[in-house]
Length: 359
Image 1 (cartoon, one colour):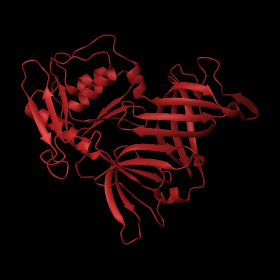
Image 2 (cartoon, one colour):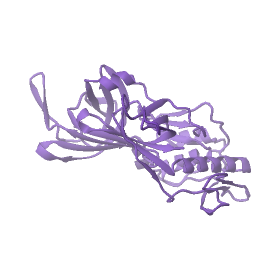
Image 3 (cartoon, one colour):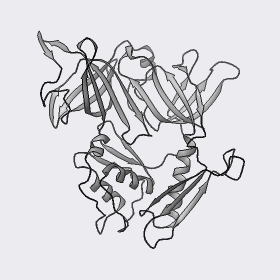
């Protein structure tokens, strides 16, 4: 959960505005863009996990001078030649950092306003493809090869609880740099996320049982307005296979959903999902990768989409406790992890959406 204003401040906040600056390398092109509307969306189901949409005023007045924001050259703040937007929210004097976003495109909107689309900094990694296939160095480890594959302009942090290990010589990555980073994370197993400064963080898998860091509720005093649930068989696997694809290595593991209605031995019937990589060298590594696949897949088969008053502190992977129909005799409590967020940047932009993978 991000640092930010307290729940009581958010409930009564009268002052709420985005702070968006534009950078080109280390140069600040604009320190406070006149943002009229905007939304940020994060999702664990996208390789580039963050997306930003802004509506910017065509002009603004500062110290009696008018500044026009429609791009006319490659160094203008809203141009798409490497410009990066640094986004925070200011709520009652408390600043919450939200992230850095590479401008992808802009277009003229209604009334001369400017519509800007930007993506999280993982987009820069996706764009910066390798010029040729590459393999690990002789002394390469998962950590060192992850760092080597990451462009030098993106920082990388590793959770100290992750156990490093040698990277098999048989491994080879194609030109898709971001795909290679995800493959290392999946085989480790680990989570690849982007922090609020545009860097990459590599984290251990989530605990099987969530330990809530925030409680959401509806009813009197709550912030939730709607919380419909969806449950789909599509993509709901129940048998997970991880195997080595290295030459001469016969290592694999099969991890099922062990109980409940999705047990492959029951009427649900087997629905397998497979993952193979030369990074897996023995049965223990295969079993760890398959178990993480199982936990992630089962967790996301039942989603509760929470519509609520905006709270900029909530982020991907937060463990949430949810009360629905609070105060009524049949009120229910659920636990889940955040798998998607859509955050409005102004009060006029409406409600926030939080997708919870609920248990």
